Length: 205
Image 1 (tube, rainbow, N blue to C red):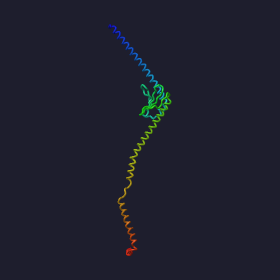
Image 2 (image 1 turned 180 degrees about the vertical axis):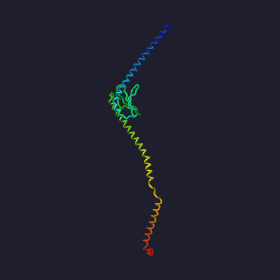
Image 3 (image 1 turned 135 degrees about the vertical axis):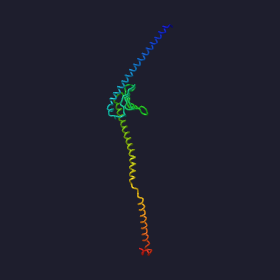
Image 4 (image 1 turned 90 degrees about the horizontal axis):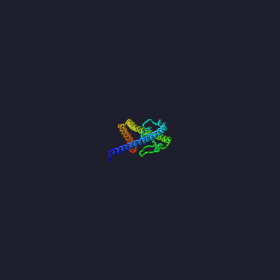
């Protein structure tokens, strides 16, 4: 094979490789255009759902419990809070409202229309608000109970200290007086009984 033939074959291979690279780039560009287009469509549908629950978003507590934001990425999601979000289903038409739990992902609502999903979001937000308030009330009650226990103990101690201790000396004197009275009464009864039997006692009394 001559040198000219080898060069011609090499140039032909280079042209084929260049053409293949151009085809791959063109296919990737078309695919990216489709991905971007699908992403834009999904985001638009999620924005429509977000508008449907705008009143709920405005009435919800302004704290870190809820997100109410649409995330970017290959698959946009409308986040309600850290564990619940809405995404577009595999059919690219339906809304899928899910919540992540310890047991796995739970589907709370799925529909091709915004209204049923918006109602499910409203109920979910209401449940979270009630749970949070009950938790705060329970925590506050426990704190008040713990604070009341030392105060009750100190009050009981103060009341115990305010009661005067019994006077030991007065108790002894009272006991002695009772003994003396008992002796006197006993002697008088004895004298009364023996007065008739012993005549000499008449001369003494």
